[in-house]
Length: 171
Image (tube, rainbow, N blue to C red; front, side, top):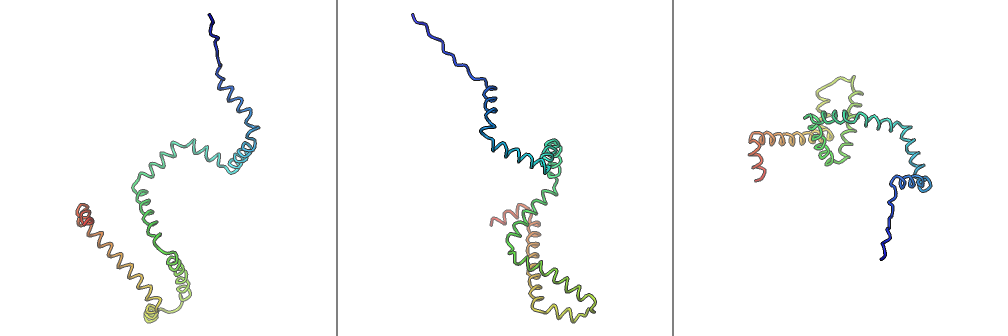
């Protein structure tokens, strides 16, 4: 009777496989290894590695400090306000801001140049009645009217209470 021939395949030693890959790596990946060394040197020269090491070392304390400061109501309110202003500023044309911010130094220059001239009510009224002044006063009046309307609606909502206001908004 025939006896089976035992067939055994020895599994390669994982450490030996890794060692062989590591030995071949410099030949196969020489350009990438050199680029990585260059990158490491740049990070070291600029102090980024030291900064990263310090951040990792102080990691738990740093995270705890950040979380403590963010959990306060003021930062939450600040973030909400920032998001609100992002929406408001996104609806305003840049040219309008340009006009406002150019008017500030122009007005300061005029005021500084006329600092020594005597003030008179007639000069102020005459300047207030120019076309440009009236246009600015109209814009300011429109703003104040809209602001008052929104304040009135906020007061009305506060007087109704949260439940009544929510019901009124669905009508």
